[in-house]
Length: 499
Image 1 (cartoon, rainbow, N blue to C red):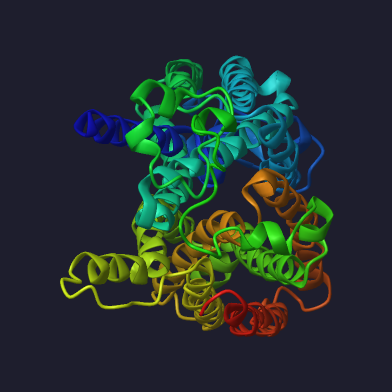
Image 2: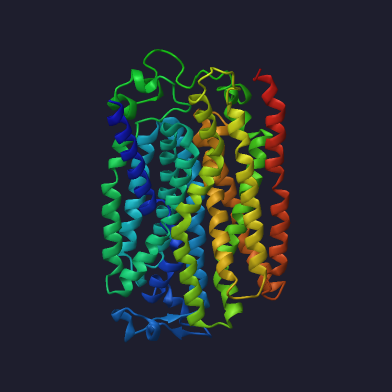
């Protein structure tokens, strides 16, 4: 029986990771998708009255456009950039809606809605064309919004892996981040003569196939912490297919209670959703996440202008370094595993000490405050890596930008791994979807500041990114107040629950 449960757990994990890799965040592969859209002539009608017009036919590898290349211009690029901004806003703000749906109705309802949105997005992309360019606003927004829910519903898989919980959550976020490479595959297929319709129709089919995960995951949620005797008293089918949280509680005991006397400290500390949202812990985390995300999104949206300055506007060099940057996103899952390992590094050690304690010696029981404290190094590493990539981006050496790309991908990975793992630990499980959704929603609005920041660079600082980058580094330093607060919070609270 234990063997079958272990196999089922692994099947759930592998299926969730594959789904996240394919559908968890393809919108972030926009640099590759925008190449296809420009080559097909999306928004090319805006170039009719433009002063500066070029034609992409000479550089196009698509047979359909070689002879009749579509015009390209700054107006077209600006409109496509607006499509991206609105789409990514949907990815973050959609977490607010799905967070409440997930808390209220559970996994199954939330996933069915999410799958429907992704399916519609793929079909709109598949059947759109230059004459219906405005549909890309709807398509990318639906794709990004639907994929945001996959993160919320799949992170719960980490709950069934005990001491490896943060590592599994990290892998889930890493798989979602790596899904940006799916757009690279679509670009490669397009260059090989496979139509955009065929590629997105295939992606729509994948979306339908992965409704299997809706069956594998529970109808409501995996509880956390899992009851210590759950696997001994619950059959496999009930354990992983329950209709609600109470189905994990056949014996009538509290499913979130374990032998640790401080397991429910979050329920004591935060008795209502409002108490979570108004707490210093949440507000500081919201500030930390919003600042770091703004730094990363601002860089992501300005990679091409930065490369134009460093390469002297060499198309070949820009294409080369843009491709390197996009491909590096496929390594996100490695950095995600690293972040999870940093958070979980002490849990395995404690387990081994207990298992090898042949003399029945007394050991201090590991508490959730220890788990919270383990996030401090991960938070600080995220700040430091983000600061290092910002500094590297200021140095006008082209080859150094490869290091900038690596550090940016690593910092962004740590950022998105931490948001789910930290909020799931620091606040009650029953509010997990809500606090995650509100954090994503507020940070989405703050991320819109990247547009006025770009305008400042262009109109105030004469296309010099240095001053804005220095401002963002200063904000990065200010956000270090979060790990400092977590340290003193644990120091203050721990004596009250440990003896």
